Image (cartoon, rainbow, N blue to C red):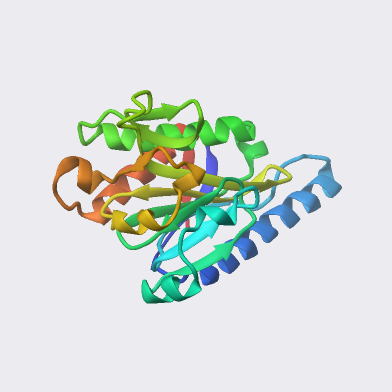
Length: 235
């Protein structure tokens, strides 16, 4: 049976406002699951899942296991770059979000999909790999970390095109992925992306040599997520 999901493209929105929005949906889903468990002993949520697509103004986020030393600028320099910084409750280290990047926040009950967290991350990676393949680019996973990479096995050329960092409680997820499409990659110069000091970052625009229609790429990502998770879109 397909997993029922509400899709929301909320355009460009402040990171903290979106985090609060996510947290509200996440809490409702967890509470729904607790209620369902109490009433009929079914370890599943009553409410559907939610998939949020968003672009953020320039922001750096640091996961709970990350090191603040991987942010290479101070508060004054951040303000000069019109960027903000947040320590957040997802896994992973530091990353950047900004215009031209597709940020996806799946708030899913993995018990409804009947998968664990490792498989969940694998399927997100698979959806992005399939999307990139549609542009004639070969992308893959990297054994030393999550996300989607190009040439991950060639140390001098390895570059990340999509970062993944998630939080889960009672197998309900939040946070998600950041896929570089038309992203200004210079902002990655001010961090050690995902904690790596010897790996690069890239974008679809950089790999292809031209700017892409972001809405068109979103539709491809959405369709590939639908396929790999067997999703049914609802209103």
